[in-house]
Length: 288
Ligand SMILES: [Zn+2]
Image (cartoon, rainbow, N blue to C red; front, side, top):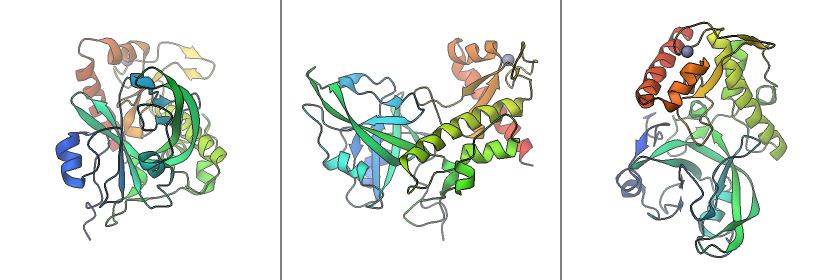
């Protein structure tokens, strides 16, 4: 069996919407939600800035990714693409999330639907209307079993893992397991939200524990101590709004100078690439 077959897209990679997605799988070429008829996939697209036509995609206060449904004028209806998202599990369709990046779209990951709500947002004409806002659980790529033919099976974590509260006292390995866990689709909404928060906390604690008081950017000792240990900031190397995948190779613990440099310096893209390579080698050493 060809284990690569189901690996349609690589997390973090940038794709051309036309040649890499629609020419291969078909589906609507316009709009945010594309539902190819011949494949069990749903492709959803989000801008990096949001706010266009009152769309407000991004992470909410609970750290859960919010995605505004389709329909540019008037009230949004639970039909077509919106319905496809809501019922994707029942219909055995996978949701692939892409974010606008330069002239293409970066693949963020597979998503599981959690729930949706109605919000009053402006439509294209500036009129307030009912907009459907979905809450989605972005699945870590490492939990996707690609040894399947058509369906990328999501490997779900046991309850003992996804319900475990992360704390500083936990080992690097325990924090990694929590951060990488995937919540079963049949878990309750409350458990799903809690588990997303646990993962997000766990990955930050993981990066700090891995750094062990030394900036992973410049190798200098953290600038000062706090009640909870050496002061370092956690930076996501690939960003989706203010988040990014909770993967060990996507986070780095930095001193404030390196963190500012990663965001604001003239050569921040190059610096980020250096950091990506650095983390990859740190992680490779850890896994030896
Ligand atoms: Zn530094």
